[in-house]
Image (cartoon, rainbow, N blue to C red; front, side):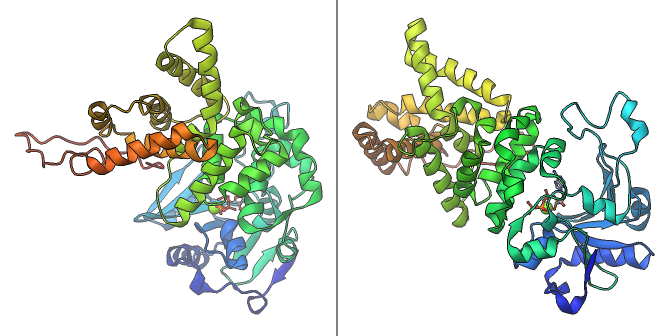
Length: 432
Ligand code: ATP
Ligand code: MG
């Protein structure tokens, strides 16, 4: 164990959120140990602005609740305290320990046959807490008592060397939680760290373990991988490590031929996403997934046309439903994204017609803009004359009718009805 005193590291209290400091000080003054831990300490050491500040302590959730009026206890798998400051929430966890053996026999046993951790709700010491974390660079503790950093696993040295290393035996750690393979890729690209050889080497053979991860968790992970700025780099690393095919089985990844439409589409949509994010523009999972799954969807639709002699539009609908449900087994897209994804696909057929009267009507389709952008995207990927002509046509339609159809909104203000209508509350998840 190494303690790095205040004058030997660059973390200053000025860089720490005032809410996190408040929480740390209150815990400390009440006689508890209190540390910042994880991503925030790592990021501060690297000069990166942390996304959030996580606190750990030896106080139990109930003790924490006793100290803060603005405290909410959450989580069943592991109880956590949220200290709420308006929109800012500081998460406070109690040190986690090892599993007790007597739990093994209960019906909710702690690990599955493959070694997956199913349950972890045991409090422990700071050393145990450190050992349970994933990467050495994620296990650094900033102590509010004397502003020093506690390093139990060599995280400081790895940060200086620029390597990402799991704590403990890599294969065992991946088996406990296969999502760590995705996290390895993500931290390596985000922080420009090199995945150490012994952590990289087992990934291709263990990638299949991702197939057992709940599809909702993989959805959350996929947002962090592809809608948080390092999309191109993450795509490349995941493809290389053999992880991509477990996120999108329908793609028949690894994508090897960089001239294929699938590869070019993937690359292009990731580039566009990164670019939009750097320009502070919104990005939408529906559009991203529409792009990733587009060519498999079209291929399936073509098969259906042949097999069942259906109209193309009907075949698209069937193929869209099939592909969506196959994908849902790996990464499940919530309906609010899968429905617009289907709209974007179906619009590709409707955007083929060039009748100005019908075209004008289509301009007010709620997903028109996304469908049109998708048409342009396909144009870039396929380098196709027909798509280029269509893009020109739809561009001119939008210019011609821009006053009347302003992004789907009516040009004249609508009269208020006698009774006020309430809007449905909107969900706060990633939006269009
Ligand atoms: P980010 O910048 O993406 O938030 P982070 O390191 O803060 O990075 P979180 O997912 O917020 O990542 O997790 C916070 C901390 O919890 C991590 O730094 C790590 O110490 C621990 N942790 C998170 N997920 C795991 C995991 N799957 N296995 C072990 N430890 C984990
Ligand atoms: Mg975090």
